[in-house]
Image 1 (cartoon, rainbow, N blue to C red):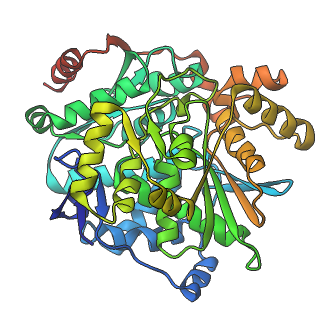
Image 2: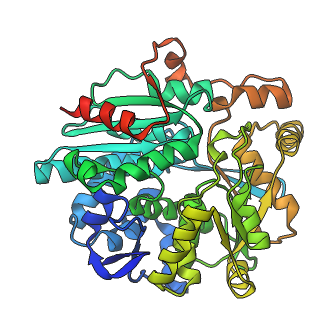
Length: 460
């Protein structure tokens, strides 16, 4: 399988380039030239597979000659051996909805599912290539912890994680900052998540800097993460589907990566009806999908901090599709977004979006109310992001198999849970030790040169 950039389809790349680079040199995002399409019978035949076996089947066509099937099989088994559920994910039925629990990995977030795989991909690549690389990643809370757990202690790789200072929950921060591994560096940026993301993008765009430090990225723009996340759409569809009913997913998302993985699964033939893009009051994606106005506003701090984002990095892949694969138009659209903070979507493109996507926005009060109602009715505690996904179905009258992606364990957001139901959601016993561990991170102002100097100093 070959890949191209959303901003230049004239050059093609192998999976190895796509995985290590993360972002194309022209600033675009990598996408495959074609995707494997499964027919109805082939999808039915997948039903008998365990989660790991299904992952092997879905992932392998995307990675080309990066590794053999046997090597991939070993890596997937190793990656998912650390999860608390034998089949990686779990399901609970709450009324007319099925909640897909994706937080049974080592850092209690859906990001572990892709990140554990990426960490082992890096180890495989570096052992074979005899190289050393430096991963630089921005996080709104969960990506950083998942990336650190996947990379910590591995040879020939350092990881630098930028998080917005005082804008992640204490548990989220401690999952990142209490490790003792010498290849992990935590940086708190005086700013918001978009500032962190812009710093990382600027470092990638600086060809000399990114080349000198052999920079790589594991944010949701990395195509390897999209592939890995598409697997749980297949698995949940096959686990809960009723063939006589349509299947819809509600996805709490800020960066459009997790919901794009569902869109990829649909492109591969999975019969998904609608994907609901569920947002908090930082609702650029909701405004884009419902009104055609993708326009950046000021980021508000909320009880669902992983979604406190304005510019959704993965949306570029959808823009490329809306442009029918026109790389020049996509490049122009992204230039306008960068310079004017705006992208207006015409009616034809909005109609195309509506074939696959719906959207919903949840206020703080609505989110707290969902947590309260679900707990009172089912004795189940939802984290605030999952509550937004759950509540989004109330905004749309969709019949069928309605699946909510539960993206994080509620213990990561104790203030929101306490405010909603006056209850403390405890960490799983395996992770209670972090509460008393000493934290280690550096606070740096939102200044590109200072961040680059810090990273350069640590890589010498």
